[in-house]
Length: 260
Image 1 (spheres, rainbow, N blue to C red):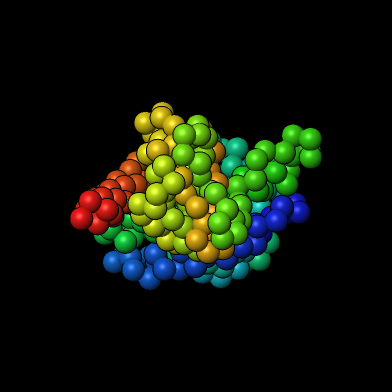
Image 2 (image 1 turned 90 degrees about the vertical axis):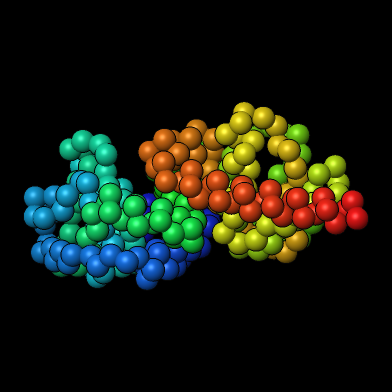
């Protein structure tokens, strides 16, 4: 994804992560995409693109407009999710583009049938949300900037504080962190895990502290945006439940060790 405005720091790292995750997901899909070549056009939806189809850019660049305003450009390796809106969104190509097309329902069914792919799907959605947050910040005057969607933590820094309100969900981009309850280490989290979803979904304070064990990079998704992701992508629930079950199992093991 290429921004037409100057995006804030961390955007490039997020785009690299996004492409890596998409490439990993596509490599595991049991589906073969249909190839859709596009000639230069002001409206790709008139020449084969469909709003209910998911695309991967195989070559070239595809721009996106809303109400005739250029927003950003999808480039090779990007995943273009279906647009549930109306005719305000259009796609344009200034040169030839090659897309791989996947029926969205079949793609999501295949993703949810595999635990690893379901987790990848969740990471793709949260990473894209972080990218879009930064693109929004690039288009909004400085005095109206929203909270950045990307953050770094050095070893020993606190990512989540026990007892604080759950305003964000975090996706751990890289690094490792310890989970503490009342200053006692009760578990660990590593790259790819989603942090803080339980408190947000249950409308309760944070039940544990998460402290960076190594240098950590996280995608921060605000509460309202995360709820919208859940609402529009129910498949995320599967991945979140898997992560939660894994965390509970780890905590149970820690309890057994501490009580031995």
